[in-house]
Picture 1 (cartoon, rainbow, N blue to C red):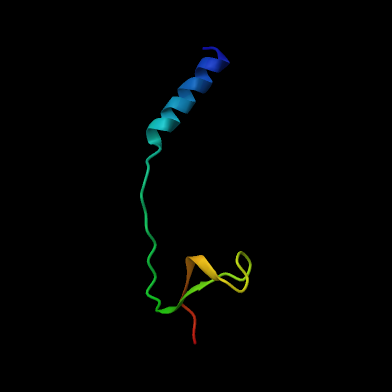
Picture 2 (tube, rainbow, N blue to C red):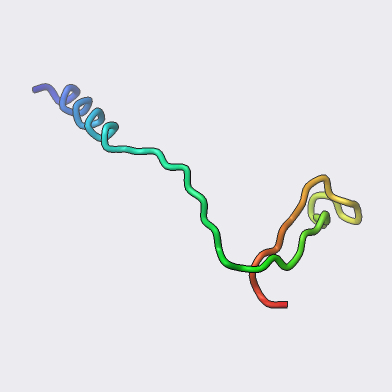
Amino acid sequence: MPLGSKLLQCIGVTGLLVTYTNALIRFACSQLSIERLDPLVTPGQISPHLHQIIGGVR
């Protein structure tokens, strides 16, 4: 069997073994803050997006 054919066969078998998953990680932490501040992107202004700080201790 030529090397190229063997390689394609291995790739095909590997493709059959691969599965796709939609996963979500959820931690039991309380939310500390939701802020519309981003000093790096929009310093001194309200940011167009939110930052959530979760976990840690106040």
